[in-house]
Amino acid sequence: AQSVAQPEDQVNVAEGNPLTVKCTYSVSGNPYLFWYVQYPNRGLQFLLKYITGDNLVKGSYGFEAEFNKSQTSFHLKKPSALVSDSALYFCAVFPPQAGTALIFGKGTTLSVSS
Amino acid sequence: DGGITQSPKYLFRKEGQNVTLSCEQNLNHDAMYWYRQDPGQGLRLIYYSQIVNDFQKGDIAEGYSVSREKKESFPLTVTSAQKNPTAFYLCASRMGGEGQPQHFGDGTRLSIL
Image 1: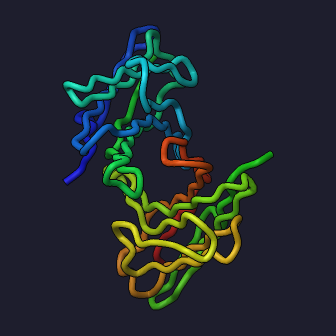
Image 2: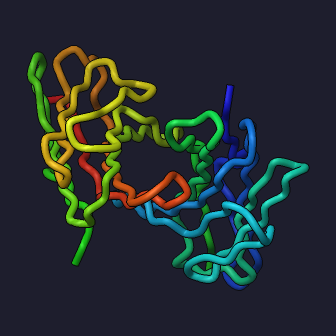
């Protein structure tokens, strides 16, 4: 079965430190990869995507993500965390050869302390 | 401003009652989606529609129904057959192919009275 895993329910980091939110996937073919962020009682906001090309993609609010095909991972990163980055982060994958819709991970809560 | 509007923001359902959640978009997007969000479970797809007058079941369609009579509107009805409807419901839309991101509304929180 095709799936997306976010192995950490919560990530805690101090403001100013780098952050990483992990995502691995198990899908067929060459997937399209996305990161979204959700603030309390709001919808999801798109951060960035990888379709093809450079393995390091840059997105909104200073976030970036690194695609690693051999490890089937797409980890979200930011060099210096802000308190305002505290939110729920979702990784999502679309398998173009076999899919009909996005497959979402269960989400990782990022908590940035001041 | 273009966007997706979900209403109401909060909704309460009595036993045996059907309720309808509204989703309207003025982005001229072709595809629209309904997701259910439960704590710790991520987003699960209920229904989606790629074009007007056509829609497909997602992973958890039982107890739900939709219509797509207009491009801008994709209402979701939670029927009395859905025995555990308490959740946060999110509507999304997308322009172009699957490589494009989905745009989300701000959700409707449904609770049982």
